[in-house]
Image (tube, rainbow, N blue to C red; front, side, top):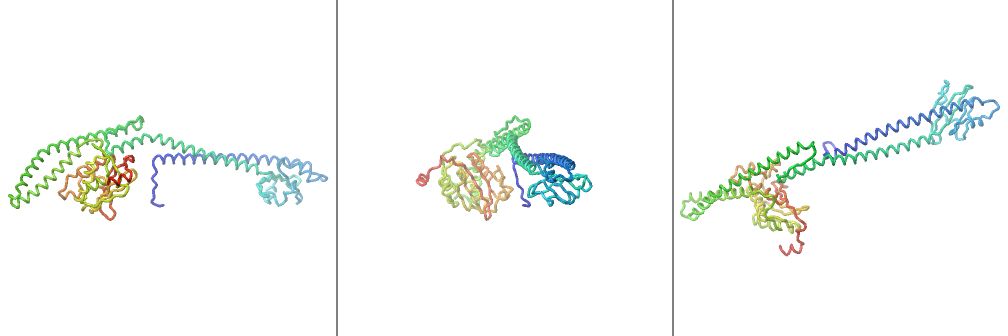
Length: 459
């Protein structure tokens, strides 16, 4: 179809190239072999037929007298593997009953008019024959008739052999191409796995290769990954240092606000209103400091894991802020996770929808192959496609969030970090009907799943 592109992988393209290339070469070789063989066999048969025709014509001419039986003479002079006809004085004689004057093409006889030997392939009763017409000095022509069925059968068998050999050779080269491409691309599989590990957040991944052609790539990858790891570690230490430094003034601010709050009745209306604003800002400041502390923690996995009924945890974390539904399988699903971190994930998703997405429409827990998903739909304008990956970056704030007095852009970064530490993933989708949909995927271990009876008893 016009405009449709089939994106084949590199390995498949190599195998396809081997297969098509070998098929083309085998076809050309088979065609050339058949043509040369056919030309040789046919020329040999023609030379033999011509020699037999000339020999038969000479012997017939020597033995041709008025008192000799023509049919007997034709029987003596006919080719060993064929028959013969004599055309003389407008009369035809034949050594075989199946051959008549109508079997001989007129063009063949006309060709002998100038005294040269003429040859022509003719179908007689469905069988191919080679007619060799030799002019006689006494007038007329001697026609030797030799069968070509054996030659045609030989060429047919040769064709079958060449086609079979070509097909087997092409298949062998295709298999060789598959093996060679797999072996040649094996180092690239390691590169792909390493890049995927880095994308998942494992910055300790390094490439090791003995292939001299990939050594420079591996060294560049390792250098860049090490630099990225060092940068992330520096950022994490900086965030941790800043958050620790801010805890002391934050504690002082909280205590001061609490003291002022106890004397709220003594304050003027203007001061009381400012106190409310101050309380909100201090609370927001506290959340930012807490987020900085949490996001600066560097661990390879969740600090503490235990079997958790995900649907029940989501209901508890969402509370009465939105409706929560779950499929039957997801309602029973158990994940191994740190409950505190998962609660933070759900809370951050709901808070993000409330602050920047026009409010939460629905929270749904559904099952997926080998996993369970938490889906949060909001009523906002949606997230542009080019920002789907950026929203999970640290300190990223969308255009709308920049105009509001929101957080520091750490909420969804914490979501991505906590989910990644549980071996899962998070993504943004466009909600049908408008708005954004955030989907958290967490793996499940089948050995941890309770039977339905236990699940119903503990609901």
